Length: 268
Image (cartoon, rainbow, N blue to C red; front, side):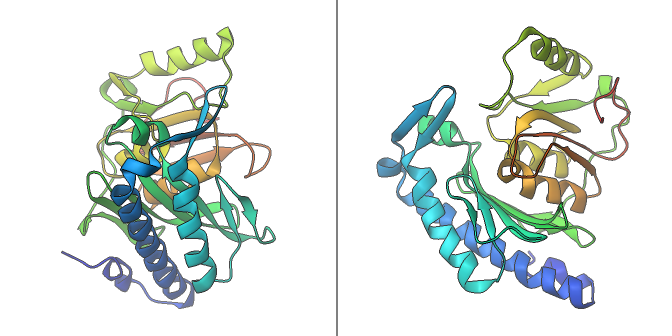
């Protein structure tokens, strides 16, 4: 099994060398926070607040308090994270962090949870680490350098037609609740053979990167939820589209294996 830094030893050059070190930092930090989330679940799985469909639990803030100092101490880049927002002045290169993607899953004991850390460079997620500490799965990679799951190379699927594919999707807390949105979501879902909603956007995207799902579509999702997963899909040979007014605002995110023919305007 490869160490988390060895996946990056296949490419050379100053930018890729930089990505190697930063990706290792992301993976090590995700493992550290994931271990704490697992060890402290009995005390951290408690609701702090509920605002509409948005649920905040103690674990979100506790994990973020571990992650942000680790990233600041080892890199010069600002951080955009779920709880704290921007830490440092926004720039072309920054970390996007979800300290616990799948907070309600964590609260209820569902296994689809994890720590998501990505580097965004010039508006694009370029490397990411997602650690599912319940299943002990580390998804790890960078654009142009490949992606791995627990030390083994992973690639997107070869499905080309939506009626033969599996769509991963969800309804985030910020999503519209009107009939038009419901109709749009239903049309997307019915275009595919199967659909999965697992309660973690990062995990859903990692499933696309690993070939477990063929496509992902979600509206009104935040960058910290999807950045690592988007980087991993791209690293594994897939494609990603991120649309929205600004990267720190709700986004429409679509990802697939790069071969899939989507119905209608799903990639617009």
